[in-house]
Amino acid sequence: MQKITLILFLLVTITAFGQNNHALKGRLLDGDTQNPLPNAHIINLNSVRATISNSTGHFSIPVQVNDTVYFSYVGYQSIKIKVTNDLLKGNDLEIRMFETPIELGEVKLKPYQLIGVLEIDAKMIPVNKYEKIHISGMPQTFETGAPVARIYNQPADAIYHPVDFMYELFGKKPQQLKKLKKLKTEDDLRSMLEQKANREVLMEYTEMDKEQLNSLLDYCNYSEYFIQNATDLQVIEAVLECYENYKALKTGSTKRDQVPVKN
Image 1 (tube, rainbow, N blue to C red):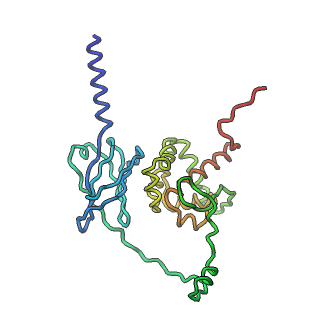
Image 2: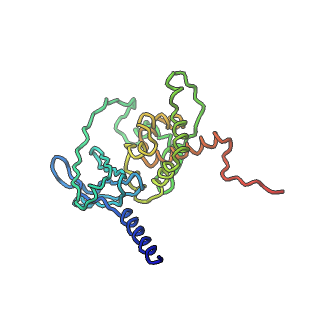
Image 3: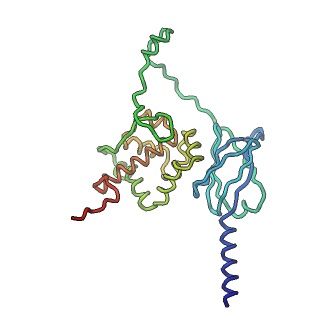
């Protein structure tokens, strides 16, 4: 009886081990030229693990069935793939990415009277007034913010407040909050997010679209300059800070894990 139990235990262990050690392998190519895309970013959104493609466009990343893998490359349209059993049968994938169409926006002339003399022109251009805080491990960044009281007059405001949505989301799905925090602690992920400003990864974890995410940052008192120019890593730092501040306001205290003092 003990031998049968031991055999069953080993079978279960081997099966579980096999299920947790899949790898999605493939190659990223330009959809038009078929040239390899080196140094593309590949992120497993479920496990919050990342890798980059090599000089020939090849990659390999640990996955499980039903994980979602996100592929991005500068100047190209991002791709998300849901991992199925068919994708894990051993054949390398060939993933073709296409360039993002560039839309030229309206050009606005700045009202600075420049005369071509560096010493004088430098004084005419305003200094960036938003450089106030420093994020660990990064160059000087932008201003900090905190939730402020807002007056909502439109009917839609009664339906959707981005900061309330975020608070409810992280309360009901704490795993989402843990993943968001992990994005800024893993060195590979930090490096990737320092180079991005498309908000796509962040939108996955907050379940917001870009407009809602911008509304959240605005509510948290971040400037338009920050909203438009911050990297994804800086925005993640801002969102997490805003969440902690708002959580403190909702609970009525900024102290965490407070232990009563015994007399």
